[in-house]
Length: 218
Image (cartoon, rainbow, N blue to C red; front, side, top):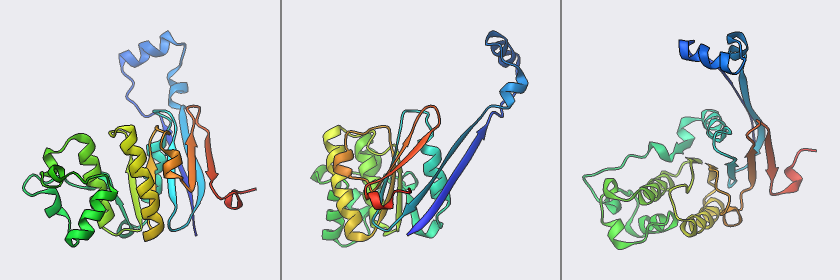
């Protein structure tokens, strides 16, 4: 089990323009007080292999910041973020997979890509939802210990999102892969069954809940 303490403080660091001064006057805010504004995003989590970590909360609450801080705390050789996956236009989806044919098809199916025409299409020509699923399949094929995905399933219909969530839960268990996912959606939590649920609130509070209550700090 690895323990990670994440903390990121964001200060106001903008340029003071005439419009900025005018807005401050409208709201009775001094420039000094504006410069003192800060927002801290922090939490401590204990992660085991096979864990699925889900970071959720409303837009602008800092989900992506916590995900990036955790990503930065892990060695690059052990992690991959699906946003780093490229979308080739010169070869088909199946030709992008480096595994044997059957294993490649299994990985694509886990990521929700099992349609023949999608598999034989070029990744750059897929729909937004299909592009997300292709990137997810490519990340699975890299055999990294940690897979990161911001805005997880945001571009998917909700039935597909739940189906993929269930398959990722099973993949994590079978392959000792840790998933760190972030999204404001919560409708697939039952299928995803995260081991650690990190909830961010707009006011700045962070709540960490473990599925196994024995892991929950007293």
